[in-house]
Image 1 (tube, rainbow, N blue to C red):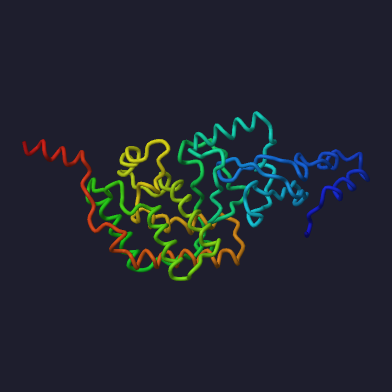
Image 2 (cartoon, rainbow, N blue to C red):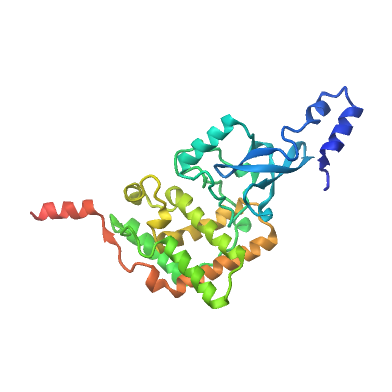
Length: 310
């Protein structure tokens, strides 16, 4: 595995150079093979088991299996992604789950990406900012290519015009169909068309919904939509049950940058791009049904106009 070393190899090296402090320091990894741990994924903590340990690039790496998840989602993580499975850390996990609105068996948002170690946040941000973290500007050559159909691009432009240039004109909430409804309709559409649906498609759709819920309050709202968000999505209300196609489409503008910070194998990335394009075609096909043709004036503007007319 290139320059990587197993525990045995590192220990042997340290034994032959027992006078070296550095070798003694790396002889024993902080987590052992077979050990049950807590592993960070985005801002959440999940129970996992260490399957393999290696010393690589001057640091310990751990191959973990997320308990309750398929082996296909096993991954290598750094030491900063893991915590000991102790009662104290269990309390920290439960407190974090409660803060983020997760249940104790919360699912990983892994349908879309496997995140890099360096992109993990530790739940220290304000609520709703913990999972989707703003990233530095990425060079265009490194962005994932997601082709948004021309009619949907125009939809995005019109959406921006309505919200930002026409005063307090907003998407009326709750939307019907909402994001959950649209994803279910797509699932049913694919099932009827193909007769069956691959597990990867279902995982991607679940991941898309999870990303929407976490991304919306952080990067999918214009400034004058924030008050509406706080009113429409109090605690334990997920945006995907309130917002619709207008805001879901905005996520596809942000996805290339989000995915550029994820560690995705080329084969997986190719499939992901194809599935996202299929979904965008589905949105385009149902554009007249899913998207609003007009937005509504916010209540405070209406009330102000009524008072002036009295």
